[in-house]
Length: 413
Image (cartoon, rainbow, N blue to C red; front, side, top):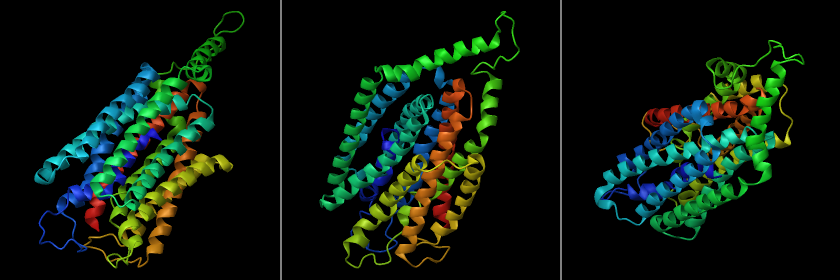
């Protein structure tokens, strides 16, 4: 849950950011469908870029040099850094920023840049570690990421239900994130000393090196010519990439589509009965139909991989399904996303948007888990950590490209 917690809390606290960047001129009609200020309209796309670009760079570096550093340094150190920086975001909630909205806009994006960069160190270390464990553990990691999104969405809905102001609810909201990150740090320190953890995280590495030496020499001590490439060499990385390229392609494309549309476009979709005095349409539509539904569908899609039989040809199916998801571009843009100037609203129903979001989340979660489960098992045991780290890097590249495209998609509405 903690791997994507900063990202989930940043994007889900939409009402808080909109309040901080609101129009301060009281003569402006706050109920107009064109009421978004330039800062409000640009915040989510810029947040995607400032969050995902550093994550991409760090995860790519981690895939090639991360194994040179201990898991404790990457995971525990990354968590400590995230907690310290996220505390700054929490403190800013209580600061009146009305007189310096543009500075607050910039400070928030810079803070997001460093938080997500350090969070990627933690995330990359955890993916590499999970790749060394049995497949059900990487399933738990993938499903836990979706649970983090559900946790953020439910916390946001509860804060709205309590009737707290955007500032009060955001403060409680961010404190909950800080506490969760601190608890995660404590759990890692506790579990990392267990025999079970040490067996998979260190002993398997030594055993695989020992087994490889046995395979190199026969009983007479003569080389049998079957020595495997040393992990970390140029040839070895190329070999691993060749073995898992369909999964790298699939996971990258999945998140290009996802981040191009969510949250930048999805958060702009309004209920057709908005401003009619109904709490569901005015207050709960976006938190529930956008954020909670997306995260719950994503979780169900990821969890279904554990309950269902893996497809016979996962390489083919993940590539085919990831390409089909490109169809969500026109579907999402035809919904009631406001403001818009170029295209008409075609899907004239709240139910239509809800169905699209459910399929959007289910496909994202299912393909993600199939890719992350199958990729590490498609290579030799000593290459599993590298394969998992490469998958995380490809995911991050998809996130960054999707986040960058999101601004263009919003402008195309």
